Amino acid sequence: MKIESIYKHFLITPSTHIPVVDENGKLIGLLSKEKIAHEMADLESEGVEYNQIPENFYDYTINEKLLHYFNSYKTIPLLNQEAQRISSWDKSQFLTEVAKLKKPEPQK
Image 1 (tube, rainbow, N blue to C red):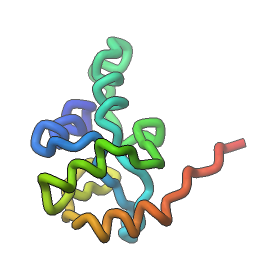
Image 2: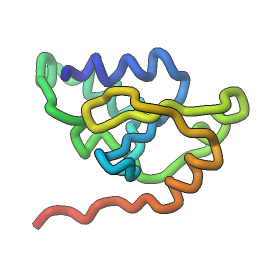
Image 3: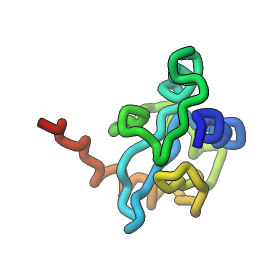
Image 4: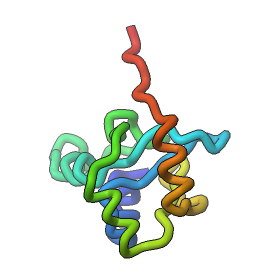
């Protein structure tokens, strides 16, 4: 997949972040619109193909803008690691899963 195929989800959903889960349905991170847009602007990454969403695109905490998203929308899309929409979560399910989210330890 190219970076543009990841970014298209932010064109459809006016959220600053989109949750991404692994094959077991466990939340692995929040895909950051800002980080994706920054990566798209990087000329060195133009044309790069990804097998799955890179770890550096994720955020691991929520911000106020993301919480305000739920004032206007009932659900938020849910993506898998290949940037495919697989489902959606409502606010309570989203907050429950984010409360369990931990940033992975750096590889040594």
